[in-house]
Length: 302
Image (tube, rainbow, N blue to C red; front, side):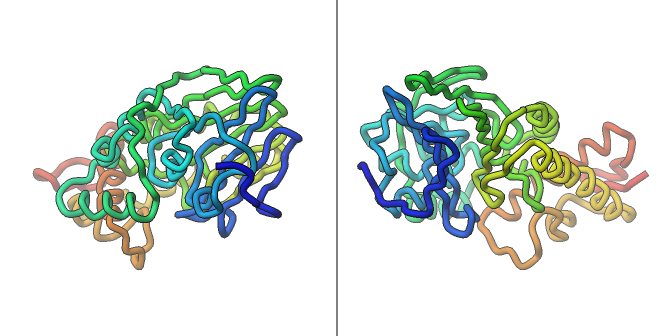
């Protein structure tokens, strides 16, 4: 699948690196994919639903690199059927099978069945049992252009960013939005996400690219302002949950209150995300002595 016409939606960062902008600046379910050309090969990082809808990339693709195994980052895995697929080895199950992907989310029962169907129908999910794993620091030498993997777990176990020749850093789902960090799957981890944010803050690039929303950020000064605001969402959520526990309440109460999504959001995994996030914050409160379990499953701020 070659030479799709992207027109103004292909934004050139250098003569070898382009962002294939998704609809509405990559707002979910769309995303901003990174196209990297070398003398020998071309790769696409996180081929979005827009890439499939537009009929591919502007050049022939030799390899697909997934930053992690979430539905919106893998629609092109099946579309580029002749290309190799690479993903961090911790997230391999999500690329290799639909059941593996459902295990990443931690959904079960009807919610699992409904979301699995949606992923296939709307995100063109195609299992790639041939997907190969990579680790932190892995380098793809494309011929006078290099892509280096930077493991940034927390969002998922294998979530990764990428340093690309020419001063470009792809942040993937460290998307720097006002929504803040997402760590609501069973394969997510709050402490790891914070560590990854501290680590990636030190990345010195000319241009930073997010898969959603912000898209292209020029210059380190603008980047630092955005990533510091993004990280600040975590303690703000934590304080809001602590205030809610001024009266003894359960995780179910916290799920119903909605600390992550707005009340009007109706999504099959919303409650699951709220539950997983609340559980991690409550465990943090218990470790810090900020709250106590006054009876089984009921928590109270100290």
